[in-house]
Amino acid sequence: MTENAPLYPKNKSPKTLLIGAGGVGCEVLKNLAITGFDNITVIDLDHIELSNLNRQFLFRNKHIGQSKALIATETVKKMNPSAKIIGINDNIKSPQFDVEWFSSFDIVVNALDNLDARRHVNMMCQAADIPLIETGTAGYTGQTSVIKRGITECFECQPKPTEQKVYPVCTIRNTPTALIHCVVWAKDYLFIQLFGGESAKNKEVDMELDQDNQEEMAMMKESQKLKTILECMDSSDFGKMIFDSMFGNNINELLSMEDMWKNRTKPNPIFYNDYYVPNSDNKPSESLDDKEVLSTVETFRLWLSSLEKLKNTYKDNKINGLTFDKDDKDALEFVGCSANLRAIVFGISCQSLFQIKAMAGNIIPAIATTNAIVAGVAVVQASKIISGQLEKCKTVYFAYGGRRPQFMYKEPLLPPNKKCTVCQAFYYTVSINFKLLLSDLIALVSKTLSKEIPERIGEDFSLLEGNRILYDPDFDDNLGKSFEELGIKQNSILTIEPETDLDTVNTIILCIVPSTENSLEIKIKQGNNKIVSNQDIKETKKRIDVDNATNGKRPKESKSTLKSVDEPEFKKAKIISIDIPLDSDETIIIKDD
Image (cartoon, rainbow, N blue to C red; front, top):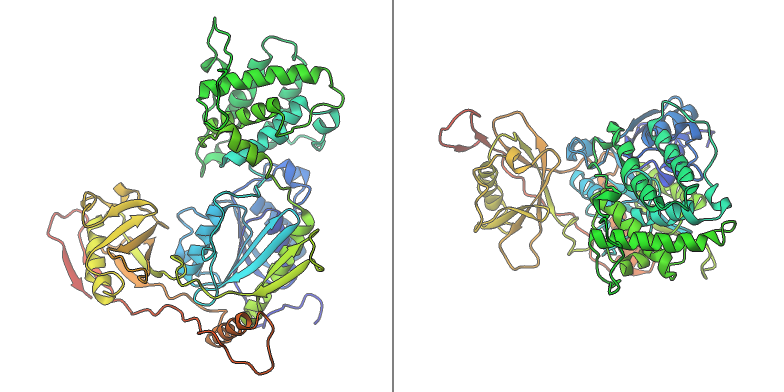
């Protein structure tokens, strides 16, 4: 193969979507560009943090505070100027990224660190019927696998842990979305800056300030304020200064960066005087239970008490400083209360000290080498898919430091779990004018789907958005409300659940796309299969059957001992239009087109 020659046939120019431009995403984007993928869209919501620079090598000090997706795109374009690379600074769950948008791509690569977002992308790829390469790393371990509707298991086919064990660093300083982010902030930033040794405090990289970079300036101001406050450690107002700076003034500084909160919920700053009671000792109760979630006032009082104790211990050992130990009562109380106070600011649910202690012991660092290895394997998988060799893809694991004789090992792709409610669902796209009523959609479903596929729906059914019931036979309060009033918008996912006790009935999923027409339209989402041919699908099913029957060892002459995995059979639904003038009070007329 000549240098820079593409790994796929020249008549194929796959349109690739990369979701995530962090540790794994940067490596994937670089690998895609230098191996001949020349039409890439990369999307990421986050901005570059100082802590990213040790493992996300597309970024430099001068980029801190800027969009990851945009800077990664700019950097990689220099490596392959002829490639068409588009960077998007947004949330993949934003309304405009609906099933029709996903359908415009040939292949999707996930480089996410968020379980909820992974589940969303998995469902979108199932609905759009496009291949998804899933990646993940955790310290010195990682894996990558391929997901294709009707052929392999999807992300939801296997049960997931209720709590993540590995957590992103990039959102900790400015935009936490989970309590664990607050725990990491309290343990690895606040505790160290207040009570760590001089070497630990000075770990942050020295850099020239960019006066036009608001996020960088905010971070540097925060660090400088802490240093100034530390000089007043003997002051009786030390606790007040720390509290107001960390949970009040710094939050106001973040709120001044309006672009950061366009797609996020804004935090609410809190201040010392909100909870301090004059003429009182403000000491915590002596009968606190570490397995109970404390009130905000009790959290504040315990925070003050633990701060004072740690301060006295630190004074005797300023050079070496203190090291966080989850079994140290004072350290745990300070970190736990700091995490819960920050959670209150960002609208995140608090937890008990007992639960926070467990979290603090499960923080695993991101390793650049692991990211690079997993990203390399992911691009190899992508090359196989777009070269028509889906049957050669495997689930690949990387594990360093274990007892296995090799670092990498693989296993066959597994067939779909027949009980999975995501990949075994039937997907339909519904074009909606959001000024129409919910009753219009119920009428359409009753007129079309319940008669076309009665074995799946029947006459009685419920309609849900997530866990919210929009309609069922015993709850019709919303029928007269418009989709706007109900908060149904572009990219909403609605689920139809038949009123039956049968376990074999598949879920019906409606993917909402906008329409300006005065009617609703429902149609089957068949997917595109522009990259994966029918022959490729057939060969992959056969390969999966044989691999799973022989534990990955393929005999020269072998026949599948497992039943072939069939894709869901779709009956073509009639297109039903409901013509309703938006300003009319006339009776609704439903007709077949």
